[in-house]
Image (spheres, rainbow, N blue to C red):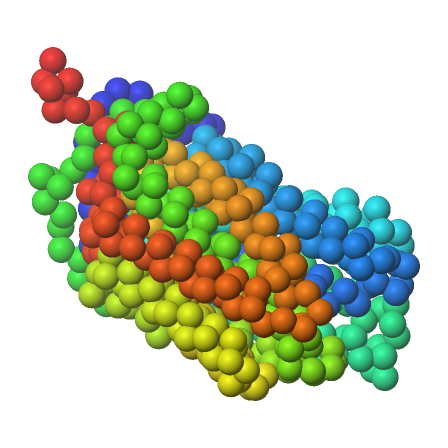
Amino acid sequence: MAAALNKGPHASLVPARMDRLPWTRFHWSVVVGLGVSWILDGLEIQIVAAAGYQKSLGMSATEVGFAGSIYLVGQVIGALVFGRLADRLGRRKLFILTLIIYLAGSGIAGLATEPWFLYVFRFVAGLGIGGEYAAINSAIDELIPAKYRGRIDIIINGTYWGGAALGAFANLFLLNTDIFDENWGWRIGFFIGPVLGLIIIYLRRHIPESPRWLMTHGREDEAERTVDEIERKVEESGVRLEPVPQEKAIKVEATGSIPFGTIWRVLWKDYPKRTVMGLSMMITQSFLYNAIFFTYALVLTNFYGLDASQVSLYFFPFAIGNLLGPLLLGHFFDTWGRRQMIFLTYVVSGAVLAVSAFLFSIDALTATTQTILWCVSFFFASAGASSAYLTVSEIFPLEMRSQVISYMFAVGQLVGAFAPTIYGSLIGEGEDRGPLTIGYYLGAGIMSLGGVVAAVFGVAAERKSLEDLADPLSKVKEDAAAQ
């Protein structure tokens, strides 16, 4: 039997009750069950980038590049489609569906016997991961208490690099023809993500729908029961919860699907500064990452004379630096503040890259010292990039949260997609350092600009309820409530 809907205005303590919770096993289950998406994405990118399937499927370098591109296109489309569905149908339905789509796409791609077969299912896998970005960032921010939200969101987004390191490590064995047949090692790699995903599906079955989403869609009774169950488990662990004062209640009435016209009005009329800030953060970090990440191997081989077989070893410190940044800096976004930390991480990462550009231009670096400077720069850049996803998911109304994430993710990905081509042309055959030096200065300036925009337009969102940062569209205005 379907739950009864609260169609009229009703007062809800759900947000206040969720934000006053201490850290519990429930929150750990959310982190593990939902946070694995970024690990899977990092794993996917590394396995595909290694191109172990190239000889088995008789693919050219251009076709290998297209396999990566089709996955990214799938991500963008998946984010846009499933982001809207997550706002309309709920977070839980979508974070189960998108994971299943990813599992199917990645697993079946490992059975490919022709390039077109690989393209189709790489696209499907991308659809699933793109949908995960939108639905899961929303769910995490709505389920995690306000005082922990910043660090948890940033750390989870940063675990992408743990997945990337895992993929690179796996490739050392899977693509070693002394251990695995050339036609089977890469296929096994494609199955790693789905195997992990099957375990995660079990965990996700026990994660409830976001009570905040239920509250704004006329399902207040279900929202209350969900919070009751969470609180019951907390108190069974020996924690005593104080009652939430009634004055913290928020009055809302059910909303349906949000028209695109309303979304446009909210973004560009109600919150134009926030929109500009969110877009600038997503675009600048995407440009920098794509510029360096997709071309670092060319730099190491063309300018420093490394063999292609040696390049993968230099990836591990690069990935570790990216992983440690969010882990070690994340809590400062909740304690020192969002605006200060976003500015710091973006600008410092740009400054270190600028220093490396100068040293590169005068031929003062080796492959090792170049990699060390990348590690330092991206230690900060990784925390900053993760904060971009946090920012766009917490400063807009709840009812359009997933869609806003998907729009800004899509714009960032599309703009950032030009970076590898630009930097690849600047690298050339490694005969002239001048063009790439200019490119590095450009990347440093673009990343720093993102930090400056955040410093000017930033929102002090640390330790604040989502509903205090942006009124839900379903919130009943005081003057309307009095009529």
